[in-house]
Length: 113
Length: 115
Image (tube, rainbow over all chains, first blue to last red; front, side):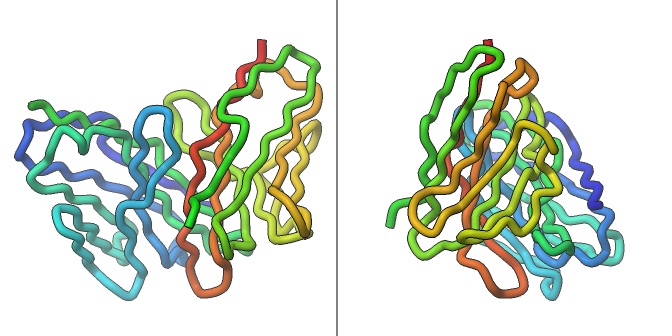
């Protein structure tokens, strides 16, 4: 099965600074790489995703970069705001028949005003 | 277009009772996943269903747990004879199906507490 590691587990940044979260995975057949944001008491919300035929994708202040050779992908948040504070999960998709998401352990991001 | 709906949002059961969790996927979505989240952890896959079919239940405990997604109505995750270790947040996610990848949309979850 897929092994997913996410770093760091906690991250504190000053408002306006950038935040980077890295995710490594083991299944070389994975081809879809989403990032989810989970606020307290809520379900995960998809914030950005990338497919294996693309190296980078950007959506306003959020970007994801993918290195398939090294089997890792990263979430980049620029100009952080207090409302970015949440737990972020990477969740590469499995190559098995279920195509389920395999979640990392999460990164608690705190943006300090 | 309403998102994924789950109910109840909170459920309290005593040991030995049954818990029934319901999930209504987004309109037009015929595929449902159930995930379990323990405190301070990521979500863990339990089961994948299409209408009237269980496609993959490899993440679900062999005993006491069952899931269904009938032709009409919501998907149901059923836990019989609950134990304290079943206390967790249970999330369902739906997607439209088909394609080489699946964008999954999550519901707000059901938080089960076993006393």
